[in-house]
Length: 97
Image 1: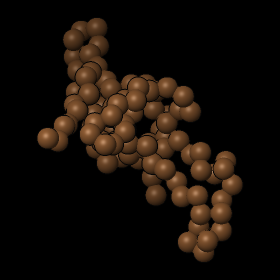
Image 2 (image 1 turned 90 degrees about the vertical axis):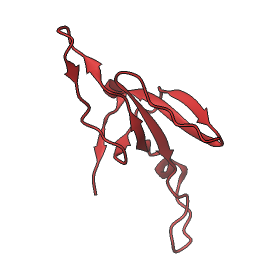
Image 3 (image 1 turned 90 degrees about the horizontal axis):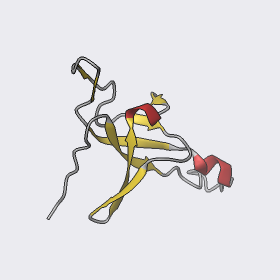
């Protein structure tokens, strides 16, 4: 049975991207370059509410690649995959090509 998680309020479900440890030519990369904290947005919640009760929509959407803090988030395991749940405020930025 496949499970799908829809985050609550201003939370975002992220699948961390593991950068390659070696180039196409076979050169091994140092450990520091493999520590890039980026991830792909899998699901977003409806958003937070302001004092008047109005919904503050998300600027992120499913499929966006984001830069994450080194620490934080909550690990979530769905089936055999691991995800991380972050608040919208914790995400540092969006990565574009």
